[in-house]
Length: 135
View 1 (cartoon, one colour):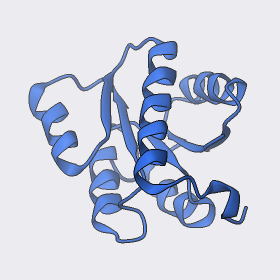
View 2: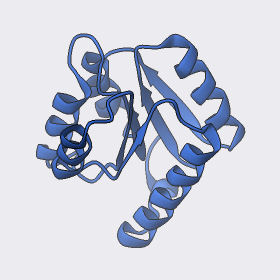
View 3: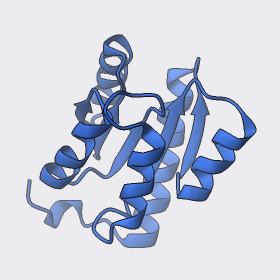
Protein backbone atom coordinates (compact mmCIF):
# COMPACT_ATOMS: atom_id res chain seq x y z
CA UNK A 1 0.00 0.00 0.00
CA UNK A 2 1.03 3.63 0.30
CA UNK A 3 3.35 5.57 2.57
CA UNK A 4 1.27 8.42 4.09
CA UNK A 5 2.53 11.35 6.15
CA UNK A 6 0.11 12.89 8.64
CA UNK A 7 1.09 16.41 9.72
CA UNK A 8 -1.09 17.76 12.52
CA UNK A 9 -0.36 19.28 15.92
CA UNK A 10 -3.25 17.40 17.61
CA UNK A 11 -1.84 14.16 19.10
CA UNK A 12 -5.28 12.51 19.38
CA UNK A 13 -6.05 13.21 15.74
CA UNK A 14 -2.64 11.92 14.67
CA UNK A 15 -3.21 8.71 16.65
CA UNK A 16 -6.71 8.25 15.19
CA UNK A 17 -5.54 8.75 11.62
CA UNK A 18 -2.43 6.64 12.14
CA UNK A 19 -4.57 3.75 13.40
CA UNK A 20 -7.22 4.17 10.68
CA UNK A 21 -4.71 4.30 7.84
CA UNK A 22 -2.49 1.53 9.23
CA UNK A 23 -5.60 -0.67 9.45
CA UNK A 24 -6.07 0.01 5.74
CA UNK A 25 -2.57 -1.38 5.16
CA UNK A 26 -0.69 1.90 4.74
CA UNK A 27 2.66 2.77 6.26
CA UNK A 28 2.04 5.92 8.32
CA UNK A 29 4.52 8.63 9.27
CA UNK A 30 3.61 11.49 11.61
CA UNK A 31 4.74 15.08 12.08
CA UNK A 32 3.48 17.37 14.82
CA UNK A 33 4.50 20.66 13.19
CA UNK A 34 5.18 22.12 9.79
CA UNK A 35 8.92 22.16 10.36
CA UNK A 36 9.09 18.36 10.65
CA UNK A 37 7.40 17.77 7.31
CA UNK A 38 10.39 18.66 5.13
CA UNK A 39 12.72 16.29 6.97
CA UNK A 40 10.24 13.42 6.83
CA UNK A 41 9.49 14.03 3.16
CA UNK A 42 13.20 14.07 2.35
CA UNK A 43 13.95 10.93 4.35
CA UNK A 44 10.89 8.82 3.52
CA UNK A 45 9.32 10.07 0.26
CA UNK A 46 5.64 9.70 1.17
CA UNK A 47 3.08 8.87 -1.49
CA UNK A 48 0.55 11.29 0.04
CA UNK A 49 0.48 13.91 2.79
CA UNK A 50 -2.48 14.77 5.05
CA UNK A 51 -1.74 18.31 6.18
CA UNK A 52 -3.29 20.58 8.80
CA UNK A 53 -3.27 24.31 8.08
CA UNK A 54 -2.81 25.58 11.64
CA UNK A 55 0.41 24.14 13.06
CA UNK A 56 3.36 25.55 14.99
CA UNK A 57 6.75 26.31 13.43
CA UNK A 58 5.34 26.57 9.90
CA UNK A 59 1.66 26.64 8.93
CA UNK A 60 0.26 24.14 6.46
CA UNK A 61 -0.22 26.69 3.68
CA UNK A 62 3.50 27.53 3.75
CA UNK A 63 4.38 23.82 3.85
CA UNK A 64 2.11 23.24 0.86
CA UNK A 65 3.62 26.17 -1.04
CA UNK A 66 7.15 24.85 -0.43
CA UNK A 67 6.23 21.30 -1.42
CA UNK A 68 4.59 22.40 -4.65
CA UNK A 69 7.44 24.71 -5.70
CA UNK A 70 10.13 22.06 -5.16
CA UNK A 71 10.80 19.87 -8.19
CA UNK A 72 11.45 16.86 -5.93
CA UNK A 73 8.16 17.07 -4.01
CA UNK A 74 5.65 18.78 -6.29
CA UNK A 75 4.26 15.38 -7.42
CA UNK A 76 3.21 14.33 -3.88
CA UNK A 77 -0.56 14.72 -3.45
CA UNK A 78 -1.54 16.78 -0.41
CA UNK A 79 -4.91 16.57 1.34
CA UNK A 80 -5.57 19.59 3.53
CA UNK A 81 -7.43 18.54 6.69
CA UNK A 82 -8.18 21.64 8.73
CA UNK A 83 -10.73 23.54 10.78
CA UNK A 84 -10.44 26.50 8.40
CA UNK A 85 -13.62 26.58 6.31
CA UNK A 86 -13.56 30.04 4.76
CA UNK A 87 -13.80 30.20 1.00
CA UNK A 88 -10.44 31.91 0.57
CA UNK A 89 -8.72 29.19 2.66
CA UNK A 90 -10.20 26.38 0.57
CA UNK A 91 -9.64 28.09 -2.77
CA UNK A 92 -6.15 29.24 -1.72
CA UNK A 93 -5.08 25.70 -0.82
CA UNK A 94 -6.43 24.30 -4.07
CA UNK A 95 -4.67 27.06 -6.03
CA UNK A 96 -1.41 26.20 -4.25
CA UNK A 97 -1.79 22.63 -5.49
CA UNK A 98 -3.68 20.69 -2.80
CA UNK A 99 -5.27 17.55 -4.23
CA UNK A 100 -8.24 17.84 -1.86
CA UNK A 101 -9.52 19.86 1.09
CA UNK A 102 -11.53 18.45 3.97
CA UNK A 103 -12.81 20.57 6.86
CA UNK A 104 -12.79 19.44 10.49
CA UNK A 105 -14.82 17.97 12.02
CA UNK A 106 -14.69 15.24 9.42
CA UNK A 107 -15.77 11.65 8.88
CA UNK A 108 -12.67 9.40 9.07
CA UNK A 109 -14.05 6.94 6.51
CA UNK A 110 -14.65 9.82 4.10
CA UNK A 111 -10.99 10.81 4.42
CA UNK A 112 -9.94 7.20 3.74
CA UNK A 113 -12.09 7.12 0.59
CA UNK A 114 -10.67 10.43 -0.63
CA UNK A 115 -7.14 9.12 -0.04
CA UNK A 116 -7.94 5.94 -1.99
CA UNK A 117 -9.28 8.00 -4.90
CA UNK A 118 -6.24 10.29 -4.97
CA UNK A 119 -3.75 7.42 -4.72
CA UNK A 120 -5.55 5.52 -7.47
CA UNK A 121 -5.50 8.57 -9.75
CA UNK A 122 -1.86 9.21 -8.89
CA UNK A 123 -0.93 5.61 -9.74
CA UNK A 124 -2.71 5.89 -13.08
CA UNK A 125 -0.96 9.19 -13.93
CA UNK A 126 2.56 8.31 -12.80
CA UNK A 127 2.66 4.55 -12.89
CA UNK A 128 3.01 2.68 -9.62
CA UNK A 129 6.75 2.68 -8.89
CA UNK A 130 6.46 1.94 -5.16
CA UNK A 131 7.80 -1.59 -5.59
CA UNK A 132 11.02 -0.21 -7.09
CA UNK A 133 11.53 2.60 -4.57
CA UNK A 134 13.96 1.95 -1.71
CA UNK A 135 12.61 1.83 1.64
